[in-house]
Length: 105
Image (cartoon, rainbow, N blue to C red; front, side, top):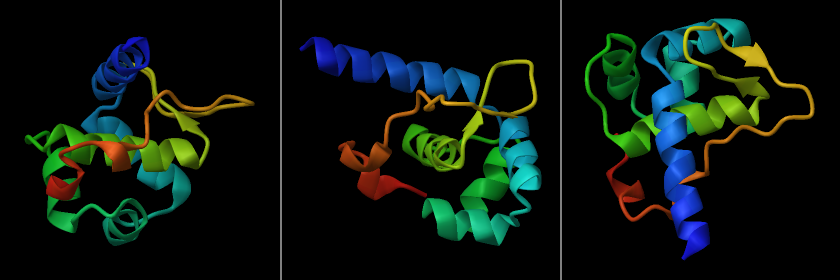
C-alpha cells in the first residue's frame, strides 16, 4: 500500500512541477518540433498545442510529456526553466501502467 501511496504522491508532484511553459522550453532545448514531441511521447499534436496554450489536458497526457522529457535528462522545478539533471532521475513515474493510459490524448 505504501508503494501505491508513493506513486500517487510522485504523480501529484510531477503534475504540479511540469508547466506548459516547461513543455515549450524543453522542446526548444532538445530542438524538437511539436510533431517530434508527439512521436516521442505518443501524445497527439493537438494535445501538445492545447497544453502549451495553457488549456486543459488529461493528467496522463501531462505525465507522458514530463516522463519523456525526463528520460532525456531534463528536470523541472516551479518558477525555473528546465535544466539538465546530473546523475538525477526525474520524479515522474512512467504513465504506461495507469488505468487511464489508453485515454492519452
